[in-house]
Length: 153
Image (cartoon, rainbow, N blue to C red; front, side, top):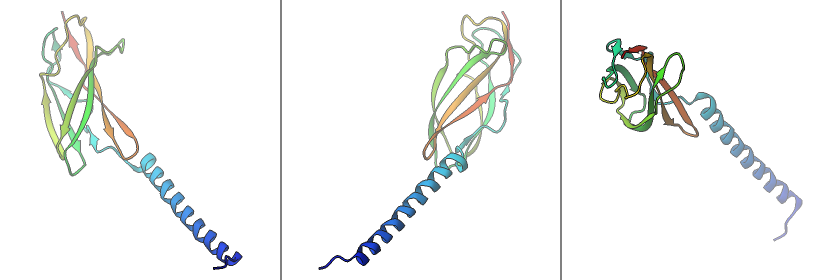
């Protein structure tokens, strides 16, 4: 079997086509992940509604909100939240929660998780948080917040 320059040229031409195709697939995937992919989770009613306007240390702060999962399957994710003073912007210690979201949009009233911690000074506060959502090649930081409310002595 004799290797000719013609055979080498054919081989290199085929190899170049494979490289071009691989680069095209890689660039397309990166473009999708960076510019087109959206997180499956959303909180459409910002700010989330706080039921009540004035609370004391130890009180439960009921919050109503809507959470939407656009994926056809239930998804699990990690969410963190903290009580934030609206003037100083200093958050209390964040609380981490592991959540499972069913497909579609769900109306939720959360109460037991939102308790004004001991030592909270009087002032205007809101709860704020973020949910870390894993995408194809990156993690989305989906942020949310509640209406302001007052903590009184």
